[in-house]
Image 1 (cartoon, rainbow, N blue to C red):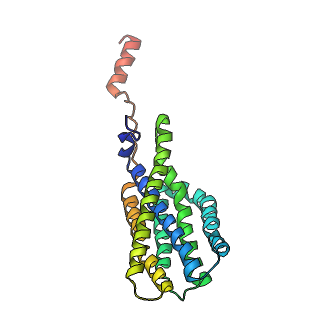
Image 2: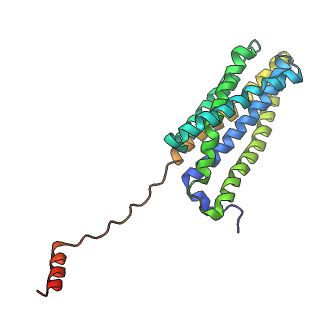
Amino acid sequence: MPLLPPRLMRDGRRVASLVAGAALMMGQLSVSLFLTYYLQTVLDWSALASGLGFLPISLVTTATATQVGTRLLPRLGPRVMMTAGLSISACGLLQLALLTPDSGYAANVLPALVTFSVGNGASFLAIMTGATADVPAQDAGIASASVNSAQQISGSIGSAVFNTVAASAATAFHGSARTATLHGFTTAARYPLAALLLAAVVTAALARKRGRPAAPKPDRPTEGRAIDVSNAIYGK
């Protein structure tokens, strides 16, 4: 018996949730790698300062997921929340891809991180909801674990591709080491950006709620049947 039963993949919402979770994790790890090298190599920050530079991601993601996602998800549903969240995250990654050696943290990096984190927070709860919706009790654990597996696999592949593309682009670039590093990572950022946009399209197309079959209406006795019953009662 396969670890992931094929019957779980017959629901478009579940497939869309897995794609969204995979793309989101790919984007997260890419941003982490990007930001680490950018803060320490381009902006020449210390390791401690660079660590503090990551704080907005955690704070904004948590606030969005707990305060915004929990309120909007019941109204809009997983499809809208995932599609919007992935699109917003893509906008934040695009802002990072447009950074230059003269960009500053407060004016350029921080707004990009806030935008990216808002999209992440809006997507998290919707992804888990879409992946586990209408799952039989015996498959609930498998459905939840499939999201984690998709995220781990995509994160590993995404970070490997991101590093490879960044290193290749930086090596081929003619300029200072600082500028070459930035060029490599802004070039590599296009790949997780494309993954987020593609996942948003897939989510919008597949994560449609399946309509429930209408309950059969009870047959109403016809006038003729009513007359027959009356005749039977009164002996007519």
